[in-house]
Amino acid sequence: MGFAGLTNSCCAMLAFQDPLVNSNYFVCPSRANRMSTVLDEAILEDRPEVDLSVLAASLRAEPERSMVLALDIGTSGVRAGLFDHRGGEIAGSQVSLANEFSGLASGNDVDADDLIDFAVRALDVAVARAESLVSRIDYVAGSCFWHSLLGVDTGGRAVTPLLGWADTRAAQAVPELRSKFDEKEVHPRTGARFHPSYWPAKLLWLGRERSEIFTRSKYWLSFSDYLFLRLCGDTRTSVSMASGTGLFNQCKCEWDRELLEGLGISLDRLPIIAGPGETFQRLSEDYALRWPLLDGAAWFPAIGDGAANNIGAGCVDSGRAALMIGTSGAMRVLCNVTPPATLPSELFCYRADRDRIVIGGALSDGGGLYRWMKDILSLNYDDAELETMLRSMEPDAHGLTVLPFWSGERATGWSGSAQGSIVGLTAGTKPIDILRAGMEAVCYRFALLARALDKVAPNAKIVAAGNALLSSPAWAQMIADVLGRRIELSATNEASSRGAALLALEAAGKIDSIEIFDPELSPVAYEPDMTRHLRYAEAIEQQQKLYEKLIK
Image (tube, rainbow, N blue to C red; front, side):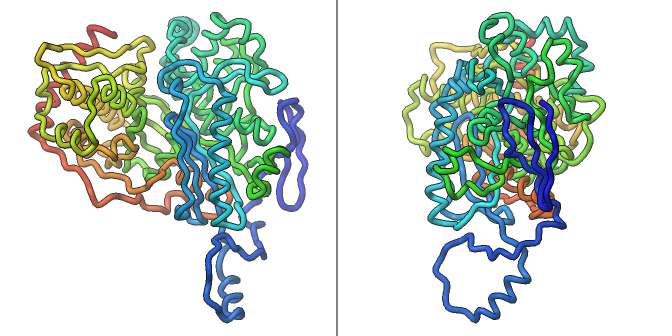
């Protein structure tokens, strides 16, 4: 995908020589060129009469106040909302649509066009709400789930289903990857183990098992790339989104040529990676007419939702680790350093942008497992009653050992074929015992992940986020007890949306750095009970013995 440069006094527009992209891509102006004489009227509200001369003087002294619409496309739903020039959430602007696509978490095929329509519906609601609050939107920022893969034809139409992180069908391709490449060399270079959640295994599997649609696929995209192709006619991707594919060289910030050559994938079948500050500048005609408020906005390519979550929660250095339990789970540190030359085998290394890396691990089961157990076990209690029951139970008192791999395993063992197990059931086992055992089992996987993360970010403070965890004090206390560490709670309602907005504001030169913002923390924190911690340490060993027997 070649391109020719075209510049004017404000920005550089890149025109691409490719049927899938148009010339709607811009480089944000440098900070030195961002002087503006336009009075900002973002927030529409009744104001008392004031002396206009005083107001004008005040406005001249104020920097331009930008407005960002942030879109967060997650496994469990799509959220959107407005943020001001300092990353502050605009009250009344947030919208949330629960996801109708269970295949993203269950590993089944998802129709990408149906998910596009769902995201567009969320934008419809968000724009309608924004129109009552603001007079313009300057930037649109986005975060989206990492690791998805989609093949499109020369006309930009999806020809494969959307394959998500929970799809383990490509596990059979992992041994072939290990025979072709040295995984110990590839892992620190790409930040990814050989695993069915990443592109190399998915591409090999599609080529073997779905050869017809593989051949019809001209380009390979993430879901967010496909969304921008539909909205703006361009397939460029962010460094962050590319970094989670397993096909990206983290040090060089480019597609990994050795892997591509070994897989037989040419570079022109992948999206061009956007440069610093580059944005999509125009919507396609249909969407420009649909959303006039967004027609003049600069659209930043989406970043990975994990990176956005860390930024939004204020975990932007090695001193703070974000621990998240939503549908899945993750524990990550984000910091402004170069990728490490060696990487613990349990961990991944991706990017937030060209300066910052994200190191950590992901669990495929978290809140999704909790919901499955609650439904399948008919635990039809209200939330408060269920919390009381969970808090009243002693640690590991149910006699059960659970391997929480209903959606497969990623960190820490990265097995492509792991499945969930419950061992120790008796006639006396109660449904609440199984639920508590499942929640504790997830905590044990976090304990193993925390040990590995301590090798790169020792004794980092832990800030917890994610709806599943924040809505269950009992689970938060289990985490503290299992890890033997204090757990602080993020007070940011929509961390991923806010993180995407903050990074966009930094790239546009509207804030000096995302690091200037301290995390917003809840006054509630959870201190570990060290007696329980010792009991849980024995349970972790028991779980690992079962893991070694059944999976390794």
